[in-house]
Image 1 (cartoon, rainbow over the protein chains, first blue to last red):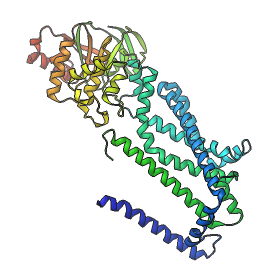
Image 2: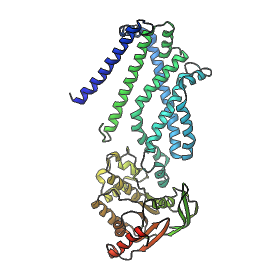
Image 3: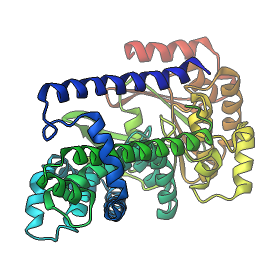
Image 4: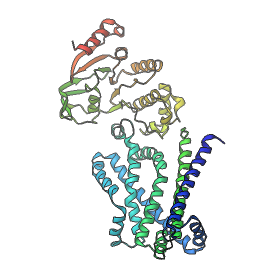
Length: 253
Length: 216
């Protein structure tokens, strides 16, 4: 096995062991499973969660919210990005909106949205509000990075909108693939947080909210671990897609 | 191609004031001048990528080779050129002409600066409309390819109006039918090269260098 491959396994294992050590120290120091359950207590709660039928339903519902949030954000940010590239005035109008969205406090906006929307919809809207600025930057940055500026080229050579779309997609695809994993895992975090706050029925966040009521901290931690593993899995899959995409273009990573 | 009484300022800095220029539609006009004198700005104004403060610029089609190649890194060289709406036959022909047929399916991200410049030149050859605006087209091309490309361009100049910006006096003397030296936003010198033998004449070369250094 290559040295780099060994390093890529050893260092995360060391980090994991360090985290477990800190966790154990905190758990022993507090000596209160309702504050800081031990690793064993959390691990033993995992089979119980997995045996519950509504866990899978909740997981599916949360994932569906994540997917819907990602798709809607993509559509909005791509449209805004396309306008920004074709029209500098449009870009000037859109940029402050993106800045505002980026600064928007997610939890506060969830509370506001709950007075307008149902707890099933609010997490999706929160995810969209959080993701649009990220995806917009993923769209606009690679085009801004083009030497000389794409708008000059498009204007000077009167390139048709269809061809502009093709070029634009080719440029944003690698940048997008590089970041999409991290963005989706961020979306999972935002959706679950919003679900917890909204106490959304049939959702991972909703289940956590319920476990909080029963002071079942071990199950809450186990659910958080599920969310982390899910995010890591998605990030890993996206990184594989990115590497394969770049390899086909002659770039070895 | 005619520019009359052009004025242009950028961020309170006057680049051109009451600037006029007329270029024949048959030959290569080289524009020389130190950095920041407004050579690239002049090309941008002709291509209507910048709006003049006042004055008239004859509206013409442009085939513009920008100072930076402006290629889409994740489209193949062929797809980059196909953006102009050209068919495969024409694209193959210009790639052959510029000597990069072997790069047809390469991605610009894997190309050198010189190769990117040659792809960018293909775009001008393919579009081939109105005035050719070439902004330091071969600054990153190696000498052997540069000589070939300059020779090919010299052959192509008949019947075409080419504005060629460069810093390289030898390159300008080799290719130009007319040499313009810009200084402080005005044409400080305008030389028509009558015969190709003028190239290499040390008197012309040294007088241009004198002009650029001293302005007299």
